[in-house]
Length: 360
Image (cartoon, rainbow, N blue to C red; front, side):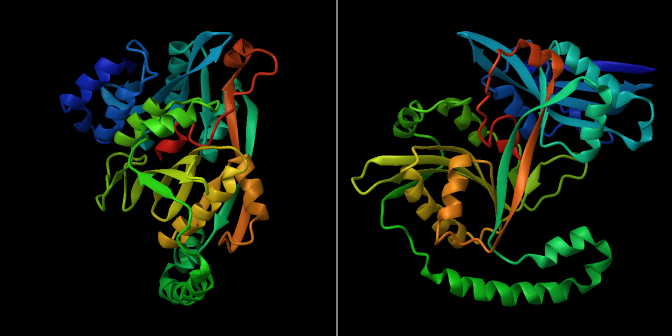
């Protein structure tokens, strides 16, 4: 027999604080991720953040949600992003995933969005027949260093035995790349790297349309879902630890010492994202100078960006240190009931970090 248990902010806090969450065969959430959900400024006290499914008294699976809102015609409209979905192999075939999702749809009256989903999850969402693709974003992935020792064995496990050969190839290629990039120096224009968004940046951000303000982003900077550590969490199957994981807030100034761009960067094990970027088009040239320097200095392997204006500028840049690029698309699945609530011509104007994308 299946039983569902819903957890709002207080209930999730009590659940994690009591230590009960760690007593199962697998974890339905990590402690630091739970705290981040609880401190989400857009999460209401009564909104469900996590649904647990028990089968014959044993934890069988869970689904998590990340509350958000739109401002439509001056009124706040609440919805949520699907952030986790898992069913133990022991209980596959018992329609638990579908039951969990339907429960979350019920909790949010169908006002649900999913993105950055796996192929398996996407197949399930489409099978339910309640989602619709909407507002896709085209992006680019730029490559800066050779990483064959990781990429090839990951795609072709049978080649793990020759990984040392790939490591030698990477070392040789990256030595040449280092020489090529030696001309990229620290920018002459002023820039600052902070661990939070300061008052000057917040005032600058207010000039731009954004789904998140400085206070919200600062909460997530202080309460990440991923902790920088060599520790491996075996019982929680979603993002929890990484050898390198950090956010940096960047301020770039022009030749007149006036702020021209602000951005949140997320670096995870050599892979870079730009969750938020606030700049007029002219300021992007200064930002690219900084970004090139940051990439070389930190030995960044890849940058994935859906920042449209920035990507256009990167295509034109003669100094940006990419060695290869690929086209990417981020797809969003909107519940059909949510689509019905949106006015004609509505544009969510999502940046790369909206939803839970900046968190992992």
